[in-house]
Length: 524
Image (cartoon, rainbow, N blue to C red):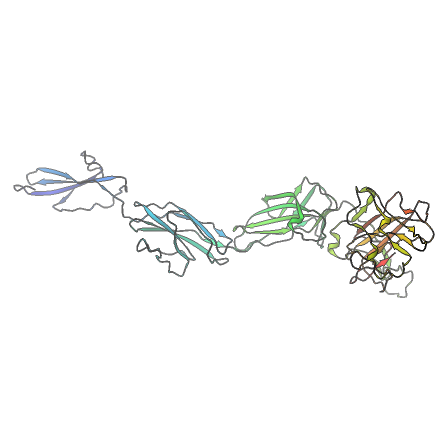
C-alpha cells in the first residue's frame, strides 16, 4: 500500500520455486482476484510431503505500478487419511481356532503409528477410526466381529489361535492403519471358507473286483490301481498322491498300520485323479502289497484311501476235492433220495483266510531251526492217562544246524520209553488246513503221532475226542513216509528228507474236522 496510491487489483500465482518468474507460476499462473485478500485454488494435483510450493501476490495500482510478494514455502499432504492397502488370506482354512493374514500397500503422508486387525463374518460397510490413540474399539462392537481389533504395531502379518470358527462358514479379515493425525484407512480381505472335514475315502481297486477283501495280480512288474471320484463338498479337491507299500510280515488282516509297512514307491503327485499304473516293479510272491491314495482338499486336510491286500498269483487254480453227500468226513456211495443229491467241496470260508500265504518249514533248507519251534517238557502234560509207558524227555530232541531229529529209547527199567515232542503254535483259522510230512521210525509197536491240540499254550492233554465231529472248513492231512532206516527200537527218527510242516488255506484229501464254533482237537 501507499498513501498516495490506491490498489486497482491483486493477482495470485502458485509455483514451485520463488527465485524465477516462470517457476513462481508454473502450477497456477497469475490469476486476477480483484481486491479479494484471500484465494483458494482447487482441482490441483500436488505432490504430497516432498515438494515445496510458493504463493506469489502481485498488486497493481491505479497508475499502473506493480509490486510482488512471495510467501514462505509450504508442503502439502499432511493430516490426510492414509490410503488403504491390500489384505491377503488363504481362501480356505482347516482349523476352527486359527487364522492368519498379511497386508501391504498402505500409504500415509504422516507416519503410520500402528496397524490393527479383526475377524468378521460380513465385510463392514464402513470402519470407524479410533477416537484417540488409546481407542482400539472403533465399530468392533458390531455383532459380525468374531475378533475385535487387535493392535499389532507396525507388523504386516498377524495370526490368532484363539478364535471360534464354524465349519462351512466364511470369514473376512479387516485391517485398519492409523497415522499420527489419528486418521485411518481400512481394507477387507477376500472370504476365508472354514473346512474342518477331510475329503471322502474310497476303496482302491487293483485288478478285477473279486467281492472279497483281498485282490490278486498276475503281473510281477506292474500294478494298475483305480478308484471312484473322491469328493469334498466344502472346498473341493486340490490334488492326489499315490504310493505303494508292502507288509513287513504277513498279518492276515485286510487293514494294517503304517508302522507295519515298508515303502515300495513313495508318494507322488498325480495329474489324473482316478487311476494310476505302477511300472518297473518286482512284486514278490506271498507278500501282501497295498496301494494308498491320499486326497487333499483346498483347506489342506487329507484323506487316505487304500486297497485290500494285493497278492501275486502267477499260477492257475488247483483242482480241489469234492465229496458226495453232506458230510465231509464220509464219501457216500449210496443214498435213498431220488429227488436231490448233495456234495461238499472245501473252500476258504473267511475272506481274511486268503490274505496270508503258506507257513512252511523245511528244516533242511534253513540255516537253523526256526525259533518258534520248541521242545515239550514233561511237567506240561495235562490229564494224560493213556501214555503212562512214555516218558517225554527233551533230551530226545536234537536241534542241529540243518536237521531236526527226535527219537526214542528204552528206559533203564525196560518198562517205559523215553521219547520227544517238538511243537510249534499254529493259527487254525476257519478255512485253514495243516499238512504234515515226516519220516517215521520203524520197529515193533512203534507209533508216530501228529497232534493238533487246542488246550492251554505249551501243554498237551488227553488226545481222545470227547465230542462228535461236525462239518467245518478246517482240515488236517498227515502223510507218513516209511523210514529207510533199520527200524531199531533204540534208533532215532530221521532220514534223507527231514520233517516239513505247512499250514495253508487249501483243500485236503484226508481230514479230521470239528464245528466252526469250536477249536479243533484231534490226533491222527
